[in-house]
Image (tube, helix red, strand yellow):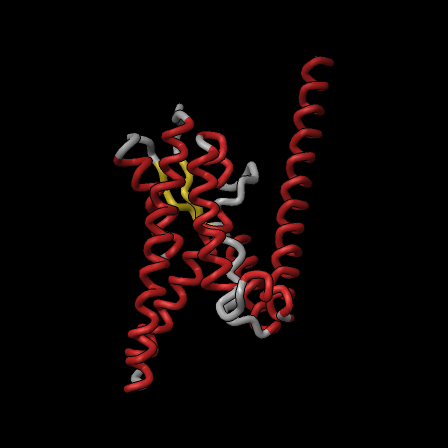
Length: 219
C-alpha cells in the first residue's frame, strides 16, 4: 500500500499531469534489503520494527525535460498523501485495538495489523525518502525549495521520533533507554552502508567515464 501510494502516485502524476510515460518498477535487491532489515529488527526485539529498503520505484520511460518544480511535485504530493494515510492509520489503531480487546476475531486482528503496518511503513517511508542524498527523492525537493524540504522532512522526522521511536519517554530522556540507543545504532549502520554503496558506484562510474574519455581521445 505504501509503495504504490507513493511511487504509484508519482507515476500517476507523471502520466496524467505532465504527459510523460512512467511506470512502477520492482527492484529485487531492494526487497532483499527490506526483508533482512525486518529480520534484524525481530532478532533485536524492536517493536515496531524497521523497514529500511524499498520494493519498487517510479521511473520515467522516456526522456522528459521536467523543471525543478515539476520534478519536486512528483515527489512531494505522493509523499504528503502517504504521510496523511500513515497518520490516519495511527488514529484508527486505537479504536481497532479496542475492538480486538472486545472480540479477538480474525477480522479485527487483521484490521489492526494492517493499520499498524500502514502507519509504521508509511511514516518510515516518507522519513527515509526525504533524506537529501543525491540518489533519494529528498534531493529533488531540496534542489527546488529548501523551505518546502525542511517542512516536509521536519514533519516526518518529528512524527517518526514521537510516534515510532520515542513513544513513552520525554525528549532527551529517550537517550537513556537501551532500546532507543539500539535503534539509533541500527540507523547509523544502515545509513553508513547506504552512503558507502552510493560512493562506491559513484566512483566506479567516474572511473568508467574517465576511461571512456581516454579511449576517445586516443582514437
